[in-house]
Length: 317
Ligand SMILES: Cc1cc2nc3c(=O)[nH]c(=O)nc-3n(C[C@H](O)[C@H](O)[C@H](O)COP(=O)(O)O)c2cc1C
Ligand code: SF4
Ligand code: SF4
Image (cartoon, rainbow, N blue to C red; front, side):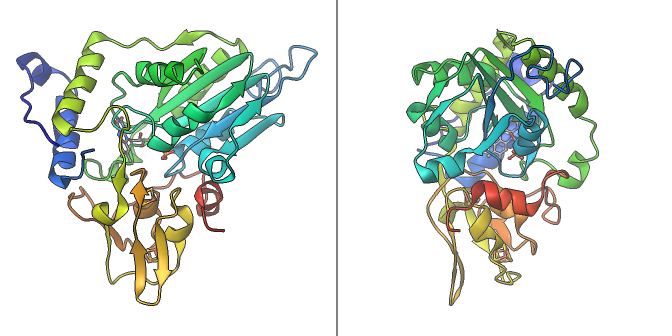
C-alpha cells in the first residue's frame, strides 16, 4: 500500500531529489507496489603467486550490465554462473577460493531472486565479494546487501557499487543514458585492484543515503523484506506490434511469457528486471501503468548479445 509522504526541506535540497521523486512517482502511478593478467590488472587471481586460485562469480542480469561486469572480473580459472539457471537447477552449494556476486540494484535492494538465492546458498570460500551495479543513485545498497547476506548467514568481505547505464525506462531515455560517460573502465580497474589484494572493505554509506532509502521505502510502499516483486500480468501489456518471435519467452528469468495460439501471454511473479521490455525487438511490450521517457528507446549492454541474455535467463529451454 502506498503511504503519503512529504520530503523534508533538507531532502528537497539534495542533489538527487529530482530522481527520487520521479522514480517514486512512477512507482506510485503503477499502483502495483504492495506487497588480473598477471601482476597488472585482471585476471589477477594469482599470477603473482604460485598457486592458482579458483574464482566463482554468480550473477543476475536483465539487460547485460551485470553479465558484462562479471565477465570483466573473470579469467580462465573463473566459473561464471547465472543465478536464474542455478535456481532452476536447484544448485545452491559452491566451493572456491573466492566467490563473488554481481547484481543490479532495484530500489537500492537486491532482485528478489538474488535475495532468495542467498538465503539457501552455501558459499564456501576464503574471500567473498559483491559488486552491485546501479544507474543513478545507489543510496544504502551496500548496507542493504550486508544486512541481507549476514541474515542469510553468508557475510561478504568486500561490497562495492558500480555505476552503469540506468535501464529504468520510466525516468531515463536510453538513447541519452548511453551517451553519458559513467567511467566504467576506471571502476573496473578499481575493483580489480581491490580483488587482487583481497581487500576486506565495504564501501561507506552516508547518513543522507540511508535517509534517502528510507524515504524511498516510505513513499513507494515497496516491502523492504522482498524488494521489487510484482506480477507480470499487472506490469506489462503486449501490443499488436508483436511478431511472435518468442524472445520474451527466453529472456525472462521467471519464465513468465508464453507463445499461445492467440498471441503472447505473460503471467507470474515478476522480478521487474526489464529483460522482456528491453529485449523485445518490436518494442511491443509496454508498461501497463507507467509512462516512459522514450518508448522508442531500448537498452542492452553493448558488449552482451541477446543470446547471452537468453543463456543467462531462460527457464524453458
Ligand atoms: C526495477 C528497477 C529498479 C531500479 N532501481 C534503481 C535504483 O534504485 N537506483 C539506481 O541507481 N538504479 C536503479 N536501477 C537501474 C539498474 O540497477 C542498472 O541499470 C543496472 O546496471 C542494470 O543491470 P543489468 O543490465 O545487469 O540488468 C533500477 C532498474 C530497475 C529495472
Ligand atoms: S519479444 Fe516482442 S515481438 Fe517477440 S514474441 Fe515477445 S512480445 Fe512478441
Ligand atoms: S516478466 Fe519481464 S520484468 Fe518480469 S521477471 Fe520476466 S523478464 Fe523480468
